[in-house]
Image (tube, rainbow over all chains, first blue to last red; front, side, top):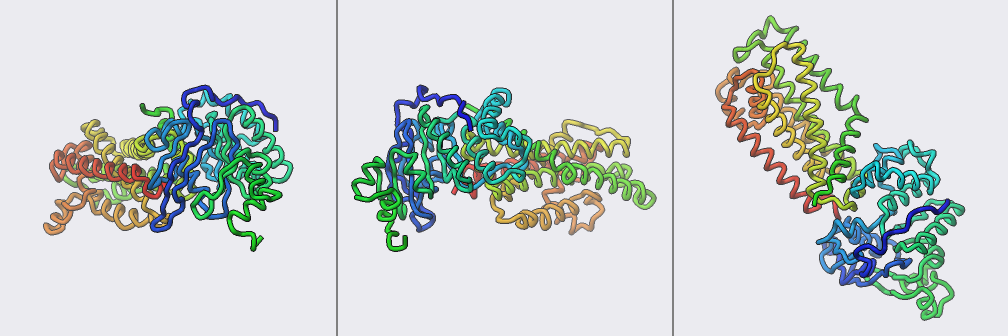
Length: 260
Length: 254
């Protein structure tokens, strides 16, 4: 993968605020509390890792940020835009690459990107150069006329990332971005993510590959049973717990050491 | 401020979906209409000569048009939205800077367009057989539009409530099809026994078909003003309910 995408417009309005500002977030499903009074910030330009075991509240928190989930308490701002009251602005700042593939089955790879740009208010003629660049960037140029079902798992994963970037977001949220990718593609993707982060894009990553998080992220939050159990600089987190790796810290904090 | 490009993109997506399923959604109603016109209007023309003072084939055409407007607009909204919910591709729209109203109007516009296009296609083909031009194109359009709005909204309600494709078929099988067939497509309510005539007045399809027929042949079983009021009230109510559900994120946002 080559890196030739434009830098995010960090100097535009909202740059004075944190990239993500969550205060006292509460999300319930009936009587079950999925996210319990969670507060944290992600700074502009940060590579933030958000970890937790299955069902801990990671995806629910992401869904609340992007508008896929409503919530019962608290506030969320993205670059100063409230995700409920000022949802148009907050959503325009975010690009999401979800854990599960959710492509429109009637569209080709090229159309998936063009239509997604359209939903963000970008006309097809304005979107075309960006769509072409992304297809080349993610080595999907020869698959531009292929539909979702004609793509391999790795191609789908790359298309999901391209779709997240098509409207030039400031905040890229990645929910398990390397699931299903082979080692070579995973390494290429890591390089790409490091590059766009160096160029100023804020990245919010959740992954079950802890070595990926340890390599890429500068600060880490860990959620367990809906509560934030750790939030600090990666090196400080590992040092403070006297552990050798992020995996050891993670297992200690989520209480799974005995099963590891 | 309205996200016009986003709205237009959604309408374009709906139109593309219709065109990609043309053999399922466009040609069947056209062929079925031709068959109805041939069998009832031509084949049985010696048995069924006149209805409400006009040749039977002329009486039949507006009912067939409305039959297709109803089923097409319902099917488009119901199957498209439910399919997107089922495959989760609805998330592409839910995370975009589109308002709930833009989402609602985008789906409705796509469905209404499909209903109107198929209605117009059936009417045009029917006119080639019947050779009688509509009396009032504006009234014709009004009833087709309001009916398409009503059933597109009903389709959205169905798509938001359904848990399976089978659920969606309940509305078509047990409500839309029987009520449409007994709602005056094939005969005037004056041809029915008095008790059945009174019961028929509770069938909402009657007013849509009757209003459209008034626009085509210039006479109707019920007052066209009553037809217009009933259809408008139903369409606005269904729109309000479906929009309320989209606004509350029913089965869209967890």
